[in-house]
Image (cartoon, rainbow, N blue to C red):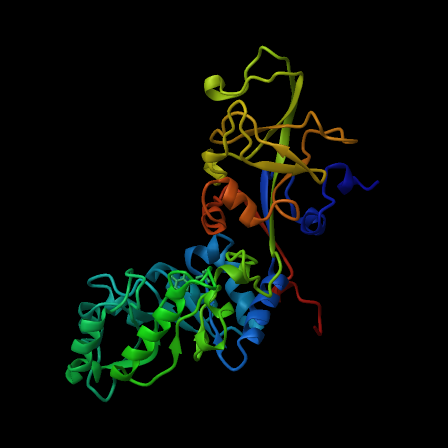
Length: 397
Ligand SMILES: *Cc1c(COP(=O)(O)O)cnc(C)c1O
């Protein structure tokens, strides 16, 4: 057996990352940049002639925009969506020639700063349209932006009456160089939900009022609803990172990350003792515990705590699932390894938090939330390790 095997590094990405993991790392997120590029490519292929943008808000869903944006750029992505101006600044510096859209639009007073970095606001209100248009020196030099149309999500976007108002105001509209008209779906993860077709038809009814420019309505799940939803651009985020939000319709993507944390200590607890804060867990047999270096400050949600009689979440050690017992604390969890077969768990060994045995969707479900929230909450305390990518490409590749 190899040294790596001894500490439980038999899974794919962990074994490949081994030499890059510092000895002091208590937890790691290993991101396969080549798989992320391949996922984007597969989504781009799936939508045929439509353009595939990349949504990289929230630091590329918690995985590190610094490495992910260049990897997506070199795969061919030319349009990025972020939520905030700070995120746009990062995207702009990493992809100087890309189009960068800011989904939150303009904060009052931030139009000049947005223009200065060359980002395009996604405009959802007449007030934003006015603030942005005020930067156009004349109607000969309109300012570039996207318009967000609300078609039934009732979150961001111009309502039908506002679109009529905008359409009637040529003084305002002429100063906007509308590059994209977009909307967002409420139920795209449910392919048979009639809301999808309803939103599509509201979109189509409103479009004649607006400049005829490229259109976009689909994110990761929407682009799986069929060609009617592709228009000129799709805007996936989650699927690029390997997420499969819709249980009914698999995206043509593969997992691109693993999360692991170290075993710090192994201990035996006798019946009559209790485990963890508030003594919520009373073992009814001699129980072997592994204490693992991940807690709620790492984004391992406290909802995964398990009192007597409960099973919420698991980690996988040497390929076997081990249930969390007792409370999740700030820095630590305790898992029951009594039933592990043929493994002697050692200090320093890795416990898989997300990987081949526990998908992002699994941990989302057991955390009482969705994979998106788990990913975007993984804290900076995890050491991020990257495999592949443009900087590590083989010469001539
Ligand atoms: C976050 C977001 C997306 C990306 O959604 P995914 O489900 O991650 O693909 C696309 N469009 C808008 C408006 C968003 O807010």
